[in-house]
Length: 226
Ligand code: NAI
Image 1 (cartoon, rainbow, N blue to C red):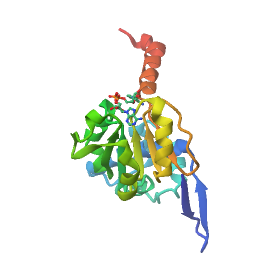
Image 2 (image 1 turned 90 degrees about the horizontal axis):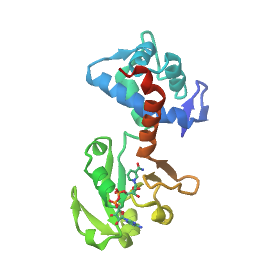
Image 3 (image 1 turned 90 degrees about the vertical axis):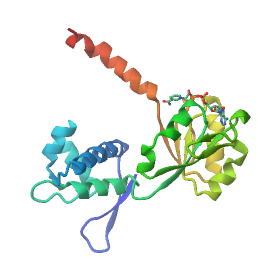
């Protein structure tokens, strides 16, 4: 992630590369700040945020300093301002057009989840290669054949594709998506995609999270067992 920071000198803007570790913490900050805002809390110190989020206050300050610090003055940060600024960094001040490739169990479940829309992620179309599914409607979207994907992406300014197909065809489909101008792939297929520089891929493996849970149960669960 690249951000442009004004460093105080006139005409001088620093182009700074932000580490993925910092980027991966931003959604969590955004979520907690949203809750604080909804509770009517106007200001919060890094120490208070640290207590709620179980992240050290110095980690929070370091993370925020990557983006100019978000103007902590006197007592803490302004919650609403911080929420909005982090939202902008996450691209949530604009909408994103998405398509889903693979209208099976997972694809349909994602299409039916309403909260993505609230954040500006708009599902515009679903594609599959199973003719039995063509024309079936999921949340106002008709499932379309793969042959229509390229023209749909171009005509509807689609920027993100969600890949919920088996791994054996995911690489080839990703290549097609890249050639028709997709900018990001939310990849649920269990395979690494080799895409050109400039195309963003976010891999999601729910089973990794489950295995991490199982590891922790095995390693630490016994100590606290009754
Ligand atoms: P599913 O079998 O219900 O759906 C897959 C759909 O993809 C089917 O409708 C099929 O016709 C379609 N499809 C297959 N090849 C295609 C192609 N080349 N082009 C277009 N459509 C194609 O399977 P489910 O449960 O929805 O899972 C989908 C994939 O996601 C599976 O490969 C599974 O391993 C993976 N998965 C990944 C998870 C993760 O956390 N990363 C979690 C659950 C599933």
